[in-house]
Image 1 (tube, rainbow, N blue to C red):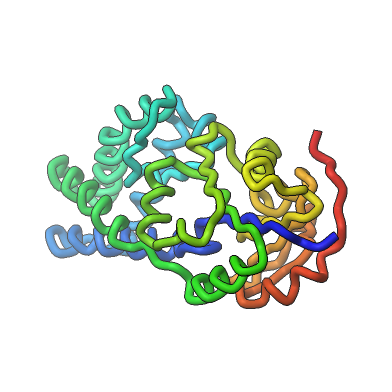
Image 2 (cartoon, rainbow, N blue to C red):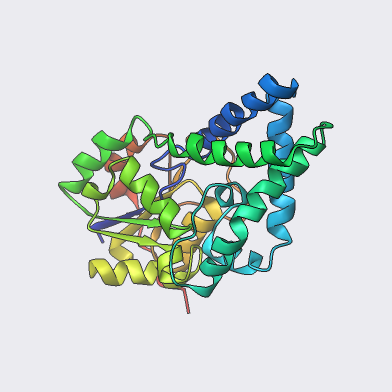
Length: 269
């Protein structure tokens, strides 16, 4: 059965996420070099470490894992929304950000709480200044939209993902947009794929999911009865337990590869 609808992941599929975060961290850490002579890359690794440690110890970690909010996203999210978990995160976030930067500085013999707060505020600005699409995205989505229904299906805090979508001017390409933090469930849970199918009035056997994560995007989609197209920009080896229906290294390859997808059956209970 021919593909009629395509779901797309957002982070590191359409918008640059990992590299954008790294650039924002390093730009922020340059201030510590200017003031205290701390190596920016070393401080970058320290703040990543402490952000992860504090994140994992938080009372909302189960929710964050289910929704798909990472520790570094917690360093710039506003956590807007009425969900009780988002409210708790919104209250805790300023403390979390300051403590992550303070502990990172302390690793390098700098004890300066006000400077930690300054770096926290700087990172917010630096990360928000970077909303970049991969070079193959705009042309590919423009052409695909002429033939297929398109949906955006992304994990994350609602405000962050909406900022990325708006900053990269992506909404114009999609018939529907689903964000895990808005619907209360995230990939790879089958329920969020079903919500996307319902929004498009689409059949699983006529729908493909395109993403960079083998577990969240590909395995999650396949369990929901969709085809999984792995966008492997870095040329990584596939995990043994996940076999994508199609693998591409550039979105420009997608249009010609979609007809090769074999039918799959619903296997998500």
